[in-house]
Image 1: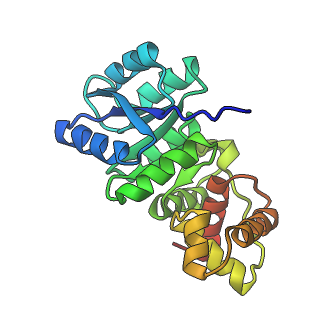
Image 2 (image 1 turned 30 degrees about the vertical axis):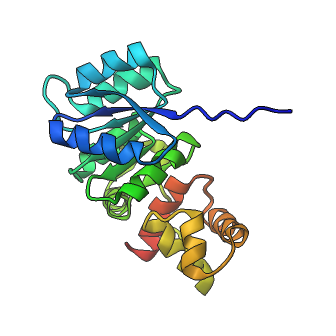
Image 3 (image 1 turned 120 degrees about the vertical axis):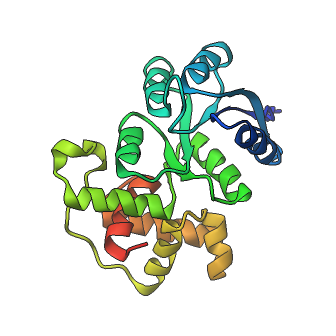
Length: 225
């Protein structure tokens, strides 16, 4: 009989605000199968905790004293490429977005998102999905439209031509842009999870992408936020 791994996902939180760290710890651990194994008040401390704890995922703020989140991200991904880093911040400047994604972040989230969405995003990121909120994807898409390949990560570059989507595909696509999971999309559109997966696969095929993050960027250009 095959055993099932029920070990919780181990999370490190890096944020310079004590109340934010404590609040995030409560929200994350309310997910049931998530455990906060440490907290850090700056990027340097986050890097040191990663070396000691090797968590599954780091929730990383951007602006912090001593060492900022982007610099910490670079160090972590260089030495521990298997550790997932999600940026969680209040800042939506496109420089931060591009720098974070170019240096290995698995997503860019804003602190005004709901707790359930944050927990779902953590699970998605650990499962290998790329996580972007709608407003972040919109900012990134605007940067891509205004910039050449020299100023954006090559793997995020999007050609200008866009495919036509059916009415139902567009409904699914708009919910994708807003960051909903396949299950939530199914509930909202009253269709099964399997049907949602089929529509998402069709959308990926039409867009010529293989990840949720790249799909969100392209769909934001096509449909808007």
